[in-house]
Picture 1: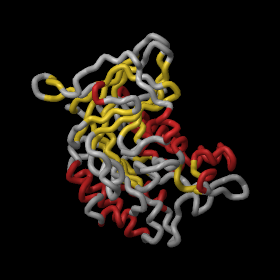
Picture 2: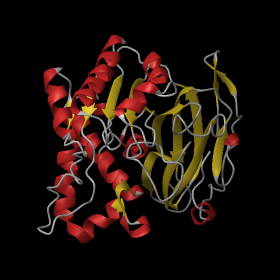
Picture 3: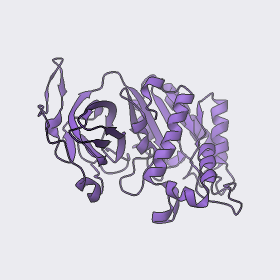
Length: 349
């Protein structure tokens, strides 16, 4: 798995008064229960096969604590949770374990499930990992602005989305860096791998545009329609997502230009085509272009730098962990507003 920076790892500690639990024991006579014995002072490793797992953690200790949990390839699974001194708080989430564990065309990663504690004062009192039984799957089809980025300082919004979802919803992020609608459909490790896994009722969110720089409008539209039809063929629920804006300001402080709004060199207005396909095919639409444009413009040229990697890389396309988290929050809001995920399965506040 991918680890946090050494400075973060050095700050991680487990509660000293841990009650050891066997790493695997009988659960209803059939499924293993994996517990705190699989954890060290900085992380937990569970030797499980690919699949979907429910994780229940008990946070807190004698001192006040503040704990976040990440897993696999730097996915944020649980937001920072504050627990007063002497108290314990239970939290649950569902996680997708797969190979490769991050980008589909990337390295395999470490087999099993890896979790890392973060936060300003992490404290883990107990943990249980069990195979999930009734899970709503959210598949993500996208590019580098969505994917599970392997290293700092990069992060895709799909990498941050799991923290906004509760137990019972799993994010399977099959976004991959550098992909267009053309390459995503053509690479057997991408769409041909995702589509067979889609089951009835699964949500499949599609955001592809940044790399369709030479794709003509007819081809782009057809490719989106092919993806939508492929999801519906398996009984899934497609959701089209317009691309996040590039942080490319005009002199007047707006993003009203083709670079920012993803209009390619052939004049193809990607967000407009996505909106058109959504309307024509009766597909739910998350207009992330409009939402990120409004946010970036409201923050201005200076305030918006922190959303992207401008300070670190002079990069106005890819998001920082902060920016990806903010943009994932915008997606969460739309999942709620459009009733795409039941309210009780979405984490707010």
